[in-house]
Length: 292
Image (spheres, rainbow, N blue to C red):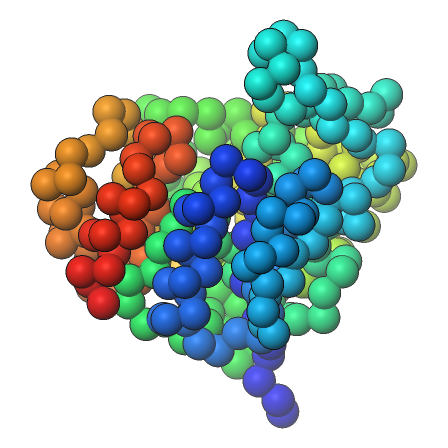
């Protein structure tokens, strides 16, 4: 029996281009065991990102992924600084909503068995073989067990409840488990089956059903589909964080950033610096280069 194949998937946009370039450089230096890297961007950003393509890296236009009725416009309420995606079938969507839809839609356009999602603000500092995501034909599903019990910061419980409604589960209560993380993997065939399940439940396109409410998380929908609909079939659970992420403002000083990198757990192979922190990419590149 042949080994399952894996693709890396990154949803990005023009303001994150230099970060995405750094991701690509550190991937090329440290990642093995994958076949292709797909970068998913809005149509207007395609020419910019084409410069990152090589024999294993492909830029994918969102117009080839998403239904034609969902279109981007400049948002006048942001003084035309931000983009908004409009249709008569969903609520107005921001870029981070559409990036989630792209991450789902790519499963219908590639051949690899597994999809390993890497945000463009991630940099790999240690070697990682993507075959470690597999146990035979079962794929790793990131799950932080019982993380949503008791007081839970953020909107995870709401996203979990909305995922249940999207999937048509009888009980729309939130799951006790959190499926949101950086560097997570999904099965291509499971994503396709999940979308077909959503369409049967709602009698409409899966993107229309998901985006009827902006308070959704694609990670929650996939995780709850695997556990609550498939009873974990073709997956194994793992709560190990592969990426150490700096989440909160204010942005760290260079010394704090260096300490953050030095304190990576042995199992962590990458760092993530949230783009809203506005950390200069040159600083990130310099610190990353010292780890090589």
